[in-house]
Length: 187
Image 1: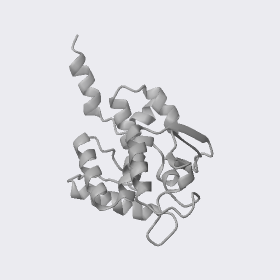
Image 2: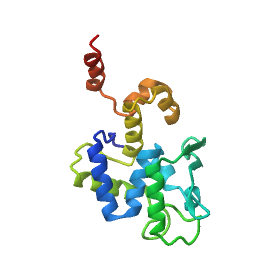
Image 3: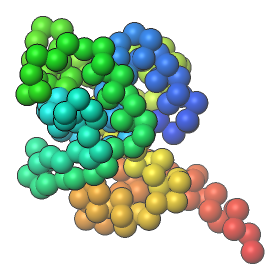
Image 4: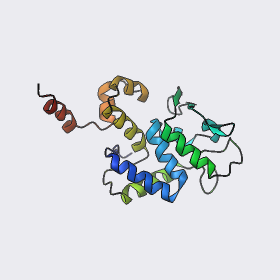
């Protein structure tokens, strides 16, 4: 498995949103929900319509059992994620709320390899050179949460990591960023 990076530059995130939204609302939602939830791609791709939609409207929260850990995860949807879900589902014919949220063109749930292709194509279109993969969504969420001041211990718990150091390495906090702390404090 390749080691992938988070998308650190917000302009690149916005550019990816524009590219994906312009080509396919499903792919746009995959990206938006992924970077706003921190879910593993296996959990994203296993979501059903019923997990996000009830009585004709977007739910406020997602509750699911993580495939990898078997643990329950319950979290609120951000305004951007809710808007993307609303727009996507309004454009789609829903036969049943038990259908996959991310339906493939052939029927059934979108597969991990196809999600990887979608994300990589969009990343290259916006000039991202770093290795990008499905795990990039989760890492991007963690990276930006940390940069916005979220406690690393909370992120460690969210990601089920054993130490803050593992979480920092996972979300791509690099030595130059650590060095910046020393240079900017300068008391």
